[in-house]
Length: 220
Image 1 (cartoon, rainbow, N blue to C red):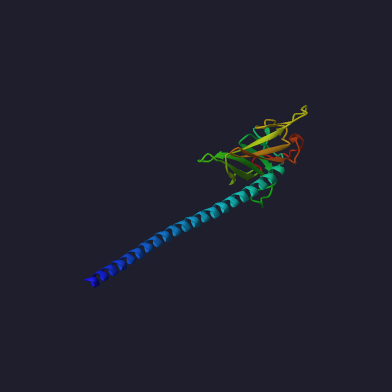
Image 2 (cartoon, rainbow, N blue to C red):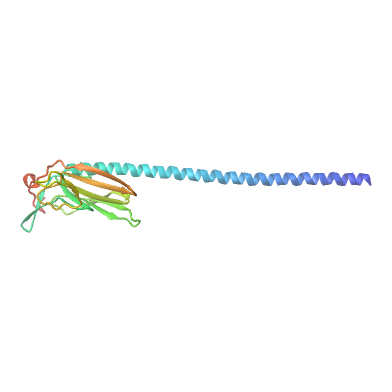
């Protein structure tokens, strides 16, 4: 009788030990799964950070190159004219959302002669502003198009105006003087509350009437 009791007690202890080992195994599996999930989340976050950083670097580099192109084109502005209905007009026009001028600096390079460049700001579907550049050789209508800037809340132009009798000039959002060009142009890149202005001087001088070579529209 005593032997049977002892055997029953031993069998009960063995079963308890087996149950405790199984519980430890389950806990270990759960902990392993949790660790794997945490590591997977960390890796995913790391990949996203790297991808986001690469996109940001690419965007900054594209912005830098685009601003360099705009700076070179605007500084190389040449006040050409064209004939339309017996009137002589200048290619240079400007307002808040667009700028047109003639220059000898082409975005695509290799173009011979002068080109007419038009910068136009358009809104994206997400509300951001895009700056497009259109370019054609003077005397032709075929235009090339490219996107220079995007992902800004606002992009706009200003023009420095100083009248013959003005002691101090001022910035205006539309150029209405048909006999002169502004001394400099200011490009605004707005993101949130940050406004990044870029001032570009025009090397061609102010008086278009004195310096403008004559070009007939449609002439090659």
